[in-house]
Structures are given as C-alpha cells and as structure tokens.
Length: 263
Image (cartoon, rainbow, N blue to C red):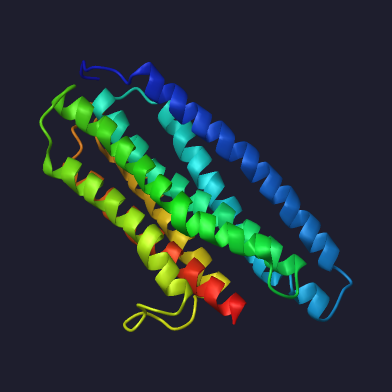
C-alpha cells in the first residue's frame, strides 16, 4: 500500500458516531414497525388502513438508516487519505440527510394517522421541517464539503467554485424556506409545479433512492479507488446539487400538504 497521510482521527470518530446513532434509531424504527404490523393483525376497515402510509414511511426510514449506518461503519475503519475520507463523509452525508427527512416524514405520518382531522402539531412539524430544518440540512452538507476543500487546498485557501456553489445553494434553500414555502402553502407561485403532493410511496422512494445512491457511490469509491486517490470536485458538486434538489422537493411537498390539510 502506498504511503500517504492517513484519515484524521476526528473524521473516523465522527463516522463511528454517525454509524452508532443511525443503528440505534434503526432499532427503534424496526421495533415500531413490528408493533404496527401486530396492531393491524386481525383488524379490518379504515382503522387499520389509516396506518398504511406510516408503515411504508417507517420501512423506508429503516432501510435508509441501515445503509447510512453500514457506510459510516466502513468509513470509520478505513485507512485512506484524509482528503479521500473528507470526500466520502460528504457523500455519505447526503444519505444521512435523506434519512433525516424520512424520519421527520414518518413523524408527520404518525401524527396524521392519529388524527382524523387537521392537526396543529402536524402543521407545526411541516412548517419547521420545510422552513427551518431543510436549510440546516443544506448547511450541514455544505460544511461537509468544506472539510474536503480544506484537505484539498489547505486552511485559509482562496474561495473556489465549489465554495461559491455551496454558499449559493445554502442561500437558495433559505429562500425556499422563508419565501416560497409560505407562498406554496397558500396555493401561490405554483403555476408550473404539480397541483397535488406526492403520495407517501413516491416521497419515500425519492429519499430512499438518494440514500441508496449515496451508499452506492461510497461503495464504488471504497472498492475501486486507491487509498491516496484524490476525489474529483465534480463528485462534491453532485452531492451539493442532489441534496439541494431533494430538500427543495421536500419543502414543496410539505407546503402543498399543509395547503391540502387546511382546505
């Protein structure tokens, strides 16, 4: 194996913590899913089917958490260059964000299943997720990409195109949450957008797909790239763009859901 600067201890420790957190939450999600299945056994009618969407959301969340946990566990034990590790952290971070969105979506489905009418708590979860949490998720991914840039160019490096892209997408996500979310929730600024929100199945597929893609890219990098190979900035740009698009979709769907619940 060629000699190179090994992974920084803090990155390995962070990956291990991410893996442990995702694994613990996945255990709770699995237990909750089993309880829902047991609850539905022997029950027919609307009372049972009200929990179909929640069960589907929990299954998607469980799979996303398992993939995130496995990927970070592998990264935590890898012996690769610090720049390579920083890039892999951001790639896995996209899957971690997708799992976070699915977790909040599952909470929302639980609140809707527990109430036959409009729920103020469900509205609060929608607004908090669509207007506050999504920009924070985008900032998290941008900061992960920032670690890669520090390893690539050094501390105090001049701003690069990737820096500007990250800042622009964080700002764009803030605008989506602060400006467009309220408009979408009132039925405005939607002339070229879908009139109805996605089904729970479609929403879960999108974010589970992001999680699968994140783990797949990481697996390819880990399997076929040499430990000291430098990762192209194009990979990091792809992580930023995919994360922004998925979070923008989440904000729009939450806003449309709020509008439909209030109608």
